[in-house]
Amino acid sequence: MAIWNVSKECMPAEDRRQLQDARLRKLVSRLYHHVPFYRHQLQELDITPGDITSIDDISRLPFTVKDDLRDNYPYGLFAAPESEIVRLHASSGTTGKATVVGYTRRDIEVWQECVARCLTMAGVGIGDKVQVAYGYGMFTGGLGLHYGAENLGANVIPISAGNTRRQLDFMVDLGTTAIACTPSYLAHVMENIKENQLEDLLKLRVAICGGEPWTVELRQKIEDGLGIELFDIYGLSEIMGPGVAQDCNQHQGSHVMDDHFYAEIIDPDTLEVLPDGEVGELVLTTLTKEGIPLLRYRTKDLTSITHEACACGRTSARISRFKGRSDDMLIIRGVNVFPSQIEAALLEISETSPHYQILVDRVRDYDTFEIAVEIDANLFSDEVSTLEKLSRRISETLQNAIGLHPAVRLVEPNTLDRSDGKAKRVIDKRRLF
Ligand code: DLL
Image (cartoon, rainbow, N blue to C red; front, side):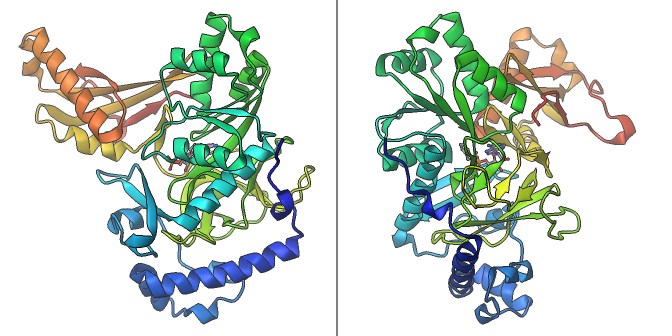
């Protein structure tokens, strides 16, 4: 079985630092000369590229937030000319517009390498059959895992998300040894495997799960239920996609690919950098990206970091299991959703009022998603079919806006709780952390 050369992940701390120093210098110079947004920011701070000499200088550099990508939509933060961009992906923005990211050929190579390194950490290699059940398309999950697994030399089964019956047929017939999908989808797949008594027909050994928060309890339940080992892969499209970090077989935190992504933890209120072990917001700088490199991107994901070497021999920084987010983004069935997107979509429908509630729960490890909307009391005297049509229209509008079909419940005015005068927009009953 081919294993990715782990020398990069095991390099001595001093060598790693030197690499990061050199890469940060090059990055700042690239941004200063190619991205007006960053040039203005650096000029305002009175920083020229020559002032940044080592990775320790990173704390002098400005932060980037998701809204900066939205404000410069779609190409404003690109540092490479259009002719060098070979792929575009997108994820949810906080309002109507998505966040668009672009990759040069070199960026795709680095991404493949990072995912191949993650798969190697999970013991996957040549001869393995990797069923990629993340969605393909603008979401980075499917293609990210696909190219990484192919780069490693594994057999890729590019089935994409959904259609569980077909997933099971191929899993059995093709002898899938590794599956890559969201943990909640894997829980659903497990139920189906059990219902159809397929356990003895499977060759499944490992699962590469991520894209949404999940608990150690869910991991344990699936590991016990299927007799396989689960790995926790992390990433976000603004930085690259899956493969920014993953846990090894020690499962003591996720190794950050920190020859490519420099990780810091900050206090989200004071923006001070926190020491190892303290929980705060993960901030990532893309040290080698060409298409859309970002300085100190605030991920809003809450975790802590350690720089202690791991028992597996890797010396890269490790981040602990995520403890939540510092913003209001929900991840429902693996899809990122901002309440502001839902509000903007509802406001397009004249019959709805601005009073709504988003209810999310998890039933048998699967997310349920309902929107309750107050509508004009007079509408309730209309025929039932009118209300059904309105519900359908709301659900379709939301499907277009956020990519998910919620159940819609139409309620009379003043039904939804507004205690303290503040609307409680989101009721999330899932226990994710
Ligand atoms: O979810 C990339 C990805 C795909 C990662 C497949 C892993 C597997 P986005 O759609 O931009 O990218 O969403 C990124 O998802 O900021 C986290 O809040 C959350 N997230 C991703 N992986 C994990 C994980 C992809 N392993 C956002 N644990 C991130 C907890 C995760 N949260």
